[in-house]
Image (tube, rainbow, N blue to C red):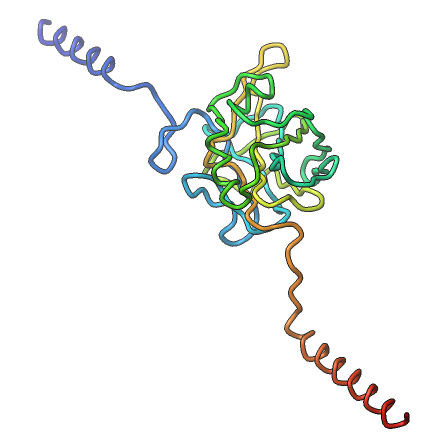
Length: 241
């Protein structure tokens, strides 16, 4: 009996010494975050700072949640550098649809994004996690205009199952060094429980809008033939003169 009691005490102590369960993603302990994904080889891969893409606009993008799958109201925020021209809204289409409109005429320039949006969310999205990468591509930016849309209740997949649902597209293109982030409310409107995007899981646009047009390989010979024809026509006109 004494041995059994001692064994029970040791088990209790061992259990007390164990850390609380936490999600681990690529060696980092995370607090139930969202992570962005998008279609295309090598696109939206978490590099430890953000998840960059050279597709402009990003295609078939969305977010996973850890742990998941989990459902809730999904809000998408488009962060546009505050020194860049931007449309009045962005249309989101695909599995879900809606129009992201300007959240405030005053840009986000300091503090956490959730505080700017008037909500409480975890993990924290401090502007220091976003602005340096933007300024590396767009030195004149000092913050972001935020465009927001609530896409309603949806089911997000676990981080191990990206590129499944939702699959979203965004109209037009994004200004260089813009971000797309998501918030998932796993609670209710009256008692919200907002889950934010991990800073390194934010979709980061690294290609200017619109991308420079590149002639197709098959079009180059036709282009050269056209120039030759124009030159010959001009030569004939000179001879007739």
